[in-house]
Image (cartoon, rainbow, N blue to C red; front, side, top):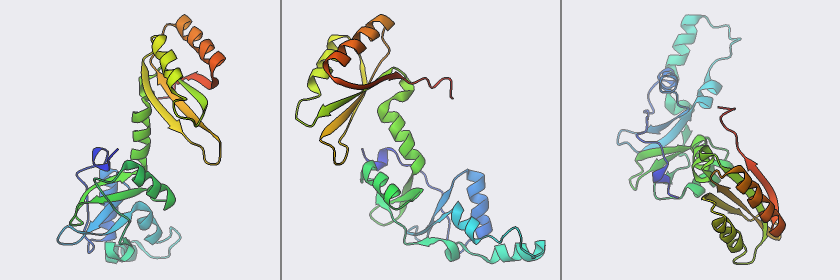
Length: 223
């Protein structure tokens, strides 16, 4: 999957000489958590997050009066508190690469740039949750089942054949190779079926394969 298909665009940016107060208001008004910082040519030079602003703001225990506080905040510029030379990716990079960087570097979001280093999008940790929801099709309901399988080629094929033979409609398939383990795991979501047929399918699968679980996600009671 490519970042360009999932990134947020257009992107709200800010200049390095704008005040921290303006940046804070922009984040609040647009309900966002980070702002790419660009120079006069539109090239990425930094990124400013709501955390940066909170860390730079005076403590609530400050002895400054309101006028002194307002003056202090107006004097702090974006360039003074932004993260310079932030990690960035291209729109043609993979979503998986973005996920690794977000996780390994404990980032909340990544600016996406073109070949001229101009900002064309942004992808965030929330987008990763949205992607997981989309690829698993959990919103479509149905039943998810998990299997433990050997790593040998073709181990998944008979399961898929049994599902097809039972008339099950497959919504998604995900396979995982746990590190340091000799087996792999497969997670399959199928569309709803008549209850008696579903029970028959579950029993048949459990008798032939190592069925880890067989469950229905009830999202309606939570959302």
